[in-house]
Structure formats: structure tokens, C-alpha cells
Length: 105
Length: 459
Image 1 (cartoon, rainbow over the protein chains, first blue to last red):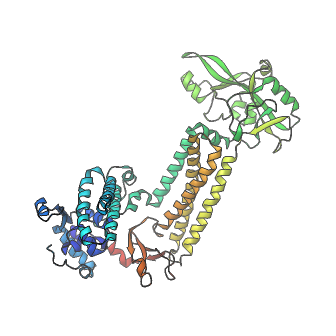
Image 2 (cartoon, chains in turn blue, red):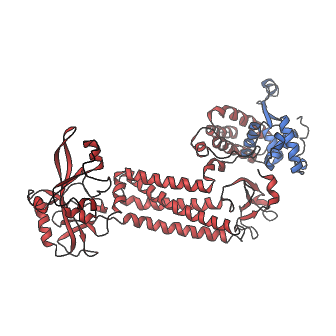
Image 3 (cartoon, rainbow over the protein chains, first blue to last red):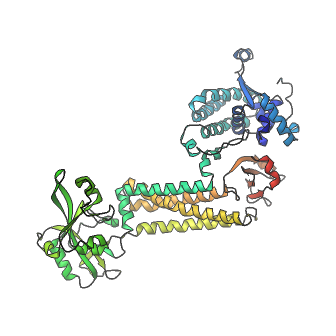
């Protein structure tokens, strides 16, 4: 079961960051302090394990804001369950990852 | 070039390293994130992000299911879900100490195998098998038979007549002298008439070479073939006596030997050209009437001995380094012994890899001696560095690679906190702290063992 998965602290931080609403790679990097070379591979692995899923933003939204479309990440049900289990093991995780200010998750 | 174009060029370069199937997606994500990073961040962060793309690409390449690196880790256990895979795990096949030693042994054997296939390298390897006092002789006037650096030419230059005069001049300086002449001998084979390269000689030659199988055939003219010639010309007829391949390492390519009495040799034309071989009674020969060359070329051994000293110096250095790291790398009892044994085994196994590998490389280049020493010295430095680095990157308990490197602290905060990289044993034996900047209290890498209470965190 997904809840039995044991995450490294890094992976748990990334999961928590996404759960907190930092849904883009750059946002996760900023809030966790982890470099890009660590965050993206970790997110790919989490995605492979079906703990998160990624989607490309609709082109129309990006065009309207005159920027390239972004890829955003969301937690899956098993990802959420794994995160809950991880938070029991890493109780300070919630304090480390604040919710984004003035940004919709 | 504008900064934006420069950053994009970096990302494109990194994308080249990404497997083709995922390249577009990754480049699109990097470009999209770059746009936001440039808007919201400083230049340093943009550069760090762009350089991080190479790490992403490297990670992807290491985790690509098809490719030589993945072949190395076919049966390597997959890391647990959610635990990041780092480039070190791409060589997971070398993570297990036994598998590492196995790979090294295989590589050493392969290097030797390649050496045996290359003619120039084979001469050097076989020359180590000759007795020290076995020499190839000619009178000083003959000339031409000897080439520099101990590598012999294929053409005989001593006539039978000259050999007779050499025997007269011997004066007890040799324990044995023998003449052999390569001739073309037409032979009737099951596949018709064939011309074989036969060496005409006397039983003395095989006594000098210490080949007992041939000595037993002395007395009557006897034809002995090589295993290869018997297979090739006589369909492997077991009635024909042979010598195993590799027995004959003297100059001249032969299919067989015609062993006759001295009287038969005496009827050969006086100008028949051949080689003269013998064994020195003493270590050196002080007679200006002869020139000789030792068939046992010891230069290869010499070239290997010197690097051997380097390797063991390296081992000593590594052991001292590990032992002097404040005792933190020390582990109690058997693990410490295992670690030392593993280091010694690696150092021993790396030697044939470098020695035979260097010989192969130089043999391929065509010029052996001038280049060989340089190549082997270069190889041994690289190998010694690898042995030490590999040892320091392993868990002192299970001897597997440490993984999950995490950078801690920063150069600007060195006074207040520890700064460097922390690595972890996948099996939960402990953590290794490698300081980036040595400080008074964190000068060397430290090993911190984890107790059984940490077991719950590790699969």
C-alpha cells in the first residue's frame, strides 16, 4: 500500500511543498531550498510511483498572460496518504513548508 | 549573445543529454520554468537552475532502461519509492563489494586475453616464461638478427656453417647450444599436398627449452606438429604427435618440428640459415666474439614492479587516511578487517588491469617500449586514485556505496555551522560527513554510525 512507502526527507519535503500549494518546479525549489538537479529527478520519481501527477497548463491561459505554459504538479490520493504517514515520521515538516503567499494552489 | 539566449543555449546543451523520448518534454519544462525564474529571481539562481539541468539530464541518463550503464545494474535493487536516485547509483553493479571484485577480475582477465591476441603484446607476455639464462646467439659479424628493445626479427641469419664454428668457440660458456632452421616442407595431407613451415632441429633444442614431450621423441627423425596444424591439415588425427599451442615462443612461425640427429643436421647445406639458441652457464657472457640477446625479457616485470610500489604506497596512504580521521571511520572487529581486506583485494586486482591494459594499448599503437612505461605510469596513477576514492565512498560496515548526497550549510556560514556534503548508507549503517572547507573542528570526513533504533527508517 502507498501508506507503507517510506520517503526520504527530501522526497517528503517535496511532497509537502506540492501539498502546500507550491505546484511548479521552481516554487518547490524555492520553498525547499533544494537545487533543480535534485528537485526535478525527485518529482519524476514521485510521479513514477504515482504519488504525484503532472499536467501542462492550457495554452490559452498562458497566452492570455503572455508567458509560456507551465507544468504543474498535484498530489494523488496515494500521495496524500503517503504524506500523512510521512508527517508522523517528520513532525517538523509542516513548519518547514509554508503555504504560498497570494497564490492559488 | 544576450543572457536569455545564453541560458537557453545551456538548457539546449543539457537537453542533448536527455534520452530522445523525453527530450522535448524536459526542454519545454526547463524553458517554461526559466521564464519564471528570470522574472522572479537573481542572476545567480538562473545560472544555478541552468546548470542543474545537466544534473537532471545525468540523472535521467542513469535511469534510462536501455543503455550500457543500465546493463551494469540489471539486477541492482531499485531504490525504495520516494527515495531519490543519484548518479552514484548508475554504477550500482559496483556497489556490492563482491561484484566489484568480480568485475575487476573479469576486466583483468579480458585485458590479458586481448594481450594474447595482439602479436606485439604476446611476444612480451610469453617472454616472461623463458628461463633467465636462455639466449639467442650469433657471432658478431652476423648482425641483423637482433632488433632493439628485445623484440626479435622473424628472419634467420646464422648459417649452419657458422653454428658449427660457434660450437667450437663455446669454451664451456654455454650449458647447451642448439641450431634450428625454418624450412618449407611439402607434406602429403588428407586434403592434398601442402607446404608446411617446419623447423629442422636436433633434440638439443628441446632439452634447452625444457620440453620433455619432445625429448622422448629423440633418436629417430620425428615430425611433431602444432595442435593448430594438426587440426588444419590432418583433421585432428590423434596419431600425429603435437605440442600444445603456445609451447613454441622462439622466433619463426612454425607448423611443426622435424627432429633429427646431429648427423642429419650436418648434411644440410652449409649456407642454410637458422637461429642459434643456448643457455648461459653464468649470468653474463664476457666474450666479444658473441652477441646474444636474452629471450626472457624482464622489462615487462620491471615496468610492472614500479607501479606495484605505487599501488601499495597508495594503499598505505589510504589506510593511514582512514585510520587518522579521528577514529570516526574506524569500525569495531570484523568490519574493519573486511574493509582492509577489500582495499587490499582491490589494489591487487587493479594491477593486472593496468599492466595488461597498458600493454594492450601500447601494442595497438605499434611502438611498445618507448610508450609502455608512460602509459602504465599514467594508468597506475588513475587506478590508485580510483581505488582510494572508491574506498572512501563506501560504507565501512557493508562496503556498499554511500548514497543520497546532501549539501549542508554554505561557505559564508562556516563559522557558525558545518559546511559540506552528507552521504548516507542505504542500509542505515550510518552517515558520512565530508567537509568542503576544512575547519578546526571539521577538518576531515567523519563517519557517524547509526544504531538499531534507526532501522525503522530503512527498508
